[in-house]
Picture 1 (cartoon, rainbow, N blue to C red):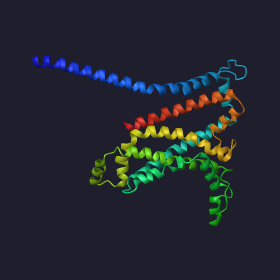
Picture 2: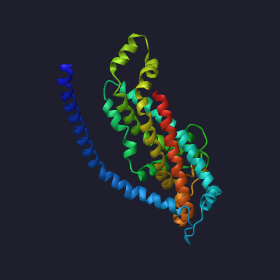
Picture 3: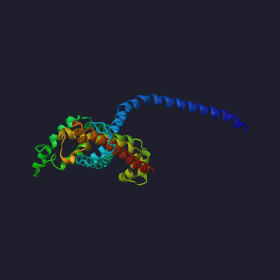
Length: 301
């Protein structure tokens, strides 16, 4: 009892000191976050709130229209085409990109020499300006471009890559080529957190490279699946720059994305549809983020 009475004041004093230290650190952290919060609020949240408000009003008269703008957008054939193409693009690109970049990071991590060199050079496509990428794309996939020249040389027939359904798959190739290096670096950072002892133990137990990948690598990187998936999703909406520079505002219907539609609505000042479409697109993105978080959370269990 005497020992307890002596220890209780010391423990309480230590707890109070720890509490004050945590509060002080939290205050400093909040002060550093304030500029970013102000920037996001002024340049992101407030404009989005204004767009949300405008989506329920008529752009010219300013009269309240309820859900009329949303119904008009959903009945618009161009919106349905662009939304279907965008969802198909995301559904195909994100899994392929993440799987390919993870495999690439594992291969680079297995290199005993020049691993850093490969990580650095894999980022070159992302560092290239969009105009340069568009020029390379045109030079490669034009009717008289490099790829068709190789097909003719090998006895095949030339293909109209940008004027047929192939345009959609060319867009996928461009996106994966441009973003694979970025995701590879992210996966490499995640792989560096896995202890080499786990691989040694698995090797001693008789597990080969393939079994080590499924038993050690995948469980070790699953905690970073969500953040890499979110970054890949965000980057998928940036492919519009290359598509616009190559094919203009009205490309082949297979690669006509929501960004094309919103750009055309903005050019024609069709603010009613533009605001309603932007709000629905934001809702779909938030739903995809929530779904990705749920999938990553279940995988982490």
